[in-house]
Image 1 (cartoon, rainbow, N blue to C red):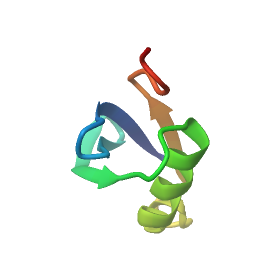
Image 2 (cartoon, one colour):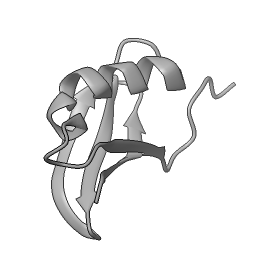
Image 3 (cartoon, rainbow, N blue to C red):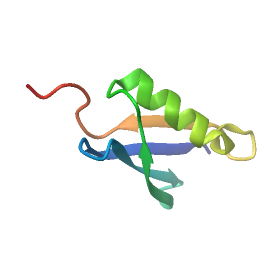
Image 4 (spheres, rainbow, N blue to C red):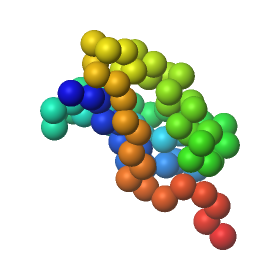
Length: 74
């Protein structure tokens, strides 16, 4: 079974996203993580670098799901 990583909130002032990781519907990780540019690709790249251990066969890989809106709020 793979690990589902959910981006649940964005703090634009601090430039961090709140990340939760689930395996088999059980939360195994929750933490704020920094980002540089508020785009889906940039945040995904940062998360893949920070959470590279979840992409290993022992965890079954990693899926990133955005539960919040990304982009400029004008």
